[in-house]
Length: 251
Length: 251
Image (cartoon, rainbow over all chains, first blue to last red):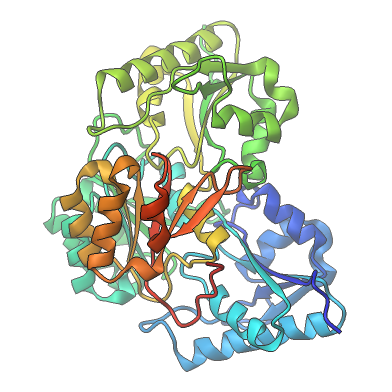
């Protein structure tokens, strides 16, 4: 029996602040029969960030949350570990539909279109259940949250913005720095000092901020010139914008 | 007399769909004593897109809306016309504070950190009223709305994303195309055929979509190969992503 109304929706839940979720995301989380959330990598018993946002934005969601494996993006886009994670997520979605769900949400931190595995998961579900419609609800990214919180405009006028994962390699970062006015680097992790050196070498350090857990209780926003000293976790965002006359950033 | 609680907040109201506004934006629009909205350029008597979203997301806002001049971004970042627009906006904000407002919102389509004049406006207000705190609430951009609606992931794995206004020049576009995996071009306007030619020359046309008024009644999402024929308005978004095995886009 097919049901033409069945839907799998990738829902961006934003950077972590439960208020930076869209009205549409809240409505879909409230309506979903099952909400898949990536568990934290280290501790399956602890709610990951997506789950925390879901529960804060939609307090009655707890009974509908289904934890699925989470695997951090690493050097290559597709690894066995990532594949296992999205296959397990797809199996959980298929199981939810088999149990009668009409609407299954996959909650992802940030935006499902930006460094998410949702498209892989959706392809697996489509292969198993071709009648299920796939939808995406965009979400606020960490880059946007850091720009807002640090009052650093990402781009103005005719400026070019580039977003680069440091896992692409420092050569790629160099090529991007040569072309873009504003560079946002994700996933710097232990390579943060090297990233900051490169930004300094191109005269960009003054316009650089490093943000971690922006909008959350543990928020840290540090000027680039101080960040090399303090270090930063893997999920920090490095935002390097041109020095601008009007920028009234708080750092 | 100074009031340390006075705030000017740049509120991103997203791409146009009233459901793609954040919970935080709705709360601030509901609480604001005055909501500045850019009027449409051609007709001062018609609600611009930001005002339409404000009224849809927050129906009781009408009495608090103040229309201010809007000037499209053009070739250089700062023109007399743009300067006049943000100076008039700053004057409206200062007048609202003088009339007793504690919270003034400036509603901007998309995200105030992405090709907005909010930082200019904020600098003018700070010069006049140094005690007024400046805040920014991020919003969903047209790029994100188009990616979601067309089910085209912007970036996966180690891919690089670049955002370029065509007003920066086609040479800049070429340099960006050479470095980035996914290129988003704004403000193509009449140069859309040239933009599409360049994307075709670099083998990117198959992964290209052109979106206008995404999420609105007049929504148009066209494959790149068809867009040159149909043309597109100034505010269209050109999204050119790599061909991917998993992409299940609807085009």
